Image (cartoon, rainbow, N blue to C red; front, side):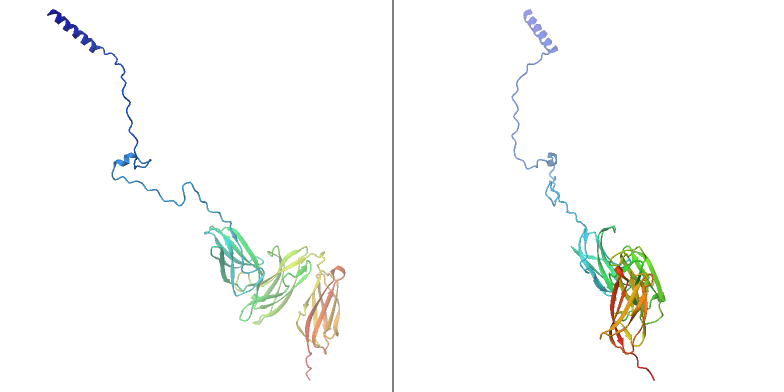
Length: 393
């Protein structure tokens, strides 16, 4: 009995000792867990799986694009250009008529065309926007009657802010047409386009005017692209409802050479009564080999004179200062009917009175020679001699 109690107590002590201090357990190998085998799925690879937990989730649709991924299309830049195809260079245009101006252009959609008609000395006569198409443009406007002579048509390509991107211009010639029905006009016959004059000597102006404003006609010379007036003269005409033939002289200032404009005008520029005629000329220095020539201012070419009358021949000898002048008049049958010798003044002006015989009629030639050596010049015109009036008893 005691032995059993002792064994029981001994077992209890061992059990209590084990509970008070546990020893580490030896590692035990566990079988490796098997990963699940991958299976096909309808989910897109970038889709958030959490979104699939809702039955209302919607797969987003990619936005449409006009270019493939990674591509970049850059429009080719347009070089602004413009030209004028109508009218042609130096085309004759009658004032008071409608003018069509057209051309070609390369431009951006927001760029516009502006067309101007400008005089040789820079006065604006008309301005009109152009109607544009894909590659062309055009516009129409009535040419004002204020100015005749040299002018230019300008076409400008403008950006949205009004800055000039490209420009092109064409020289034209404005001319009076039928003057019937006009209440006012000014015409310039002489000098003619591209005539040459000599600095320091006279230049002859011839023209016609109807109802000049203030009865005053002004003649002048302009240089520096016809922008600066360097000489001017004025004279008054009588008051009449009929056209006046008029004539005047201007001395070209010394030390000038190159392109210039001879301008006749009346009225204030820009007003309703303003009329102006502009002719491009060339100015030669006195030492130029081409600085010579003679102008017969009266009688004009192809004019009519009357037998038995005294006429005053006069004109200008270019580059002949106080030099000799010789005049002769020859009928078409070879008969010399008049002539003589005279001399120019310091500015080349000369004159000679001539009494015509009573017994002549028909075509005649008047020849004037002036100068000596390198300055010698000569000119001939034709006139028609009318028979002398029958004396009244």
